[in-house]
Image (cartoon, rainbow, N blue to C red; front, side):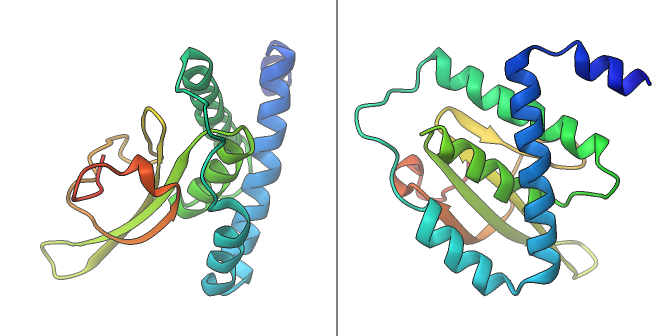
Length: 163
């Protein structure tokens, strides 16, 4: 009952973006679990890899939209009954940001750990910085070697391509 009351206290815009986040998180979770990633990659490159609309600057409106998408995805992930991986959240975030005309790049990387195992992580780099859904809550992705990059390449200005 508390969650329902909390939902109704949101603004109309927050409710719509939250509902959108739930739908895209559901679709991306199902896709990651049921479809070979090469097909997901091909779809994202064909439909969501184009540059953003020319002449749009990164104003406060875009920053607030990025924050709203990030907050809505976090809310949706906490409410939905399954554990959402960073790849699923990043795919959903990329689609939601690109639908709004906001430049975004999905990055996936790996790093080796002390016990010789590999750790993989996915995150979004949007127009004004990193949107990351790391389970530890930290945004330091500099130790990851990037193995996948989807989105507008002009956002990546550093040679290491790390935020």
